[in-house]
Amino acid sequence: MRLKSIIYLLAILPFIASAQESTVKEVKDPWKRLDVNLGGYVSKVNSTVKVGNEEHGIGLNIDLEKALDLENTSNIFRAEIGWSMGKKKRSLLQLNYFSINRFSQKTIEVDLEYRDLTYYKGTTIRTHSEMNFYSLSYGYSFFKNENFNLGASFGVYAVPMSVQISASGYGDESTTVIAPLPVFGIYSKFAFSEKFILIQSISIFYIEYENYEGSFTDLNIRLEYNAWKHLGFGLGINALNFEGSATEEVSENVSFKGTFGYNIKGALGYIKLYF
Image 1 (cartoon, rainbow, N blue to C red):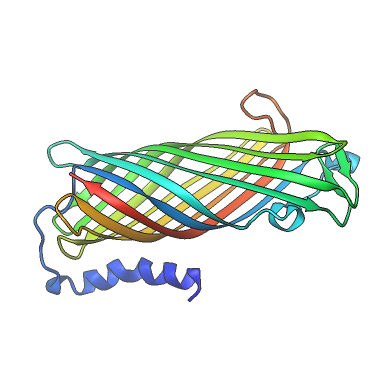
Image 2: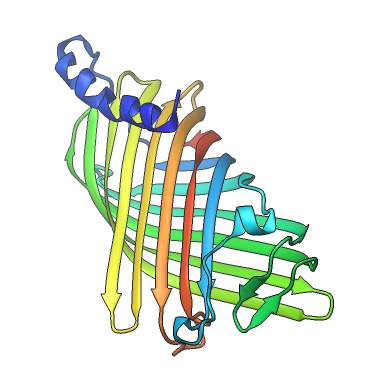
């Protein structure tokens, strides 16, 4: 089954459950004070980078997976901490982290332009692509009862990214982007019982300002099973898309001039500690 079909199926589950609300057993406060999720993320990554100045004939779109043999699948460690505050636990402070590191070595079969260098056919290129993902957000539940939790969130995502290319006789070329992003989101949680909870969230961001343009989308759909008193498990899917462009390098934190795009989607599996 394709990923889009899975996303659609999981997305409509709350509506199916709502239509059968009379058959759902009311549970006693399934929302926990503290959640710690530790697990893995099997993802498919597609990335493109374009650097240089088109007016001078420099700057090509580079598909890093096809052009440089970077792996398009990665096994990623992922950690998340959520703390629900207040007597009714309506306020939520969330901290997330994961990192993607990929390496490759390839002898190119055609000339490749990157920044102000041309790598000629037959050159062996070594590539290191790294993306770190940090997010800190605050959420508030506007509607909450024993079975359903609906809220909105605001946060900051910091996404340091770099692509380093090296080859004998050429030296090293590195492109770095550190992008702090203010992100808005909505989330919903549906407790089918005290043990099974369906969680959905989406965070979005878009900016167009002077010489910069960027967009960000992060979609999560998960099903959690609280197996024991303080230990549970979770499975889900995550789709993340991040694109940006800059026509000038004007700060130390954004040492980039060109365009980039990251599309990451995959399956999550994690152990959940809750209190």
